[in-house]
Image (tube, rainbow, N blue to C red; front, top):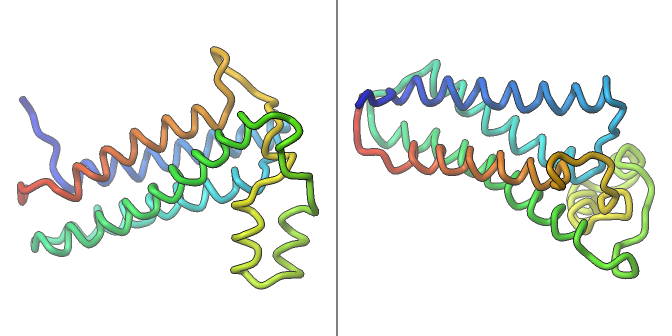
Length: 166
């Protein structure tokens, strides 16, 4: 059985993050699906994972502690996306009367409030985050995103604990 090297797995993680972002941008710009604040925060985690996977692939450190450090940073990034996507799925499953009200857009929040307040407000969710405007096999986009992020999390966890120094 062929085993992929540390560098190859990180290149794969980086390319997968590029494909994921490309798909998100395609949906936004060509299918006119405007991302809600939770969708944007999910993208941040995906880009963070991709960034650290790229750095790890380019550097390809020999010491195991450096490999694990890069993998930990990438794992934290994608774990953020898993957490936000989980919250998004949860909000979509709330009864309509329990869905938080729609508020001002993310741009307004970023200009008006400190970053910590913006993060708290976004993670609270809003009515626009509960709206389902795209499905595939009866799963909404946040469901598919969560599945995608969990798969990436598993690969990152593998990178984090692998013993080989290949």
